[in-house]
Length: 129
Image (cartoon, rainbow, N blue to C red):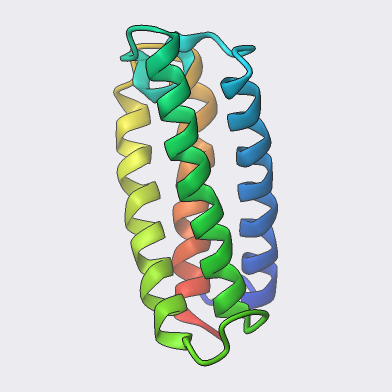
């Protein structure tokens, strides 16, 4: 895991989260089918909106944790960055498992590898330099 340079992993994770935020904004706009998000288990547009807003909040917090770990913000909070990134790793690992059981095959095929990469990169960033 340490073969991936820390900064490369952190920047890759930031790029991945930025892309995920863009995707969630498209979901929020209603341009992505409801069955293609949250495991295909959302019943209506209102649930899709709530899900997208929750996802956006989690992604923004995750980005902030990466920035803390990089020392760009909150330099007095290195433990928060480390433990926060381990929590992000666990969240994306669980999301990977959830994507494997999604009702929509597109979600399984597209998002399972993405969440797996996010979990691995988060673990690498949590490990530090």
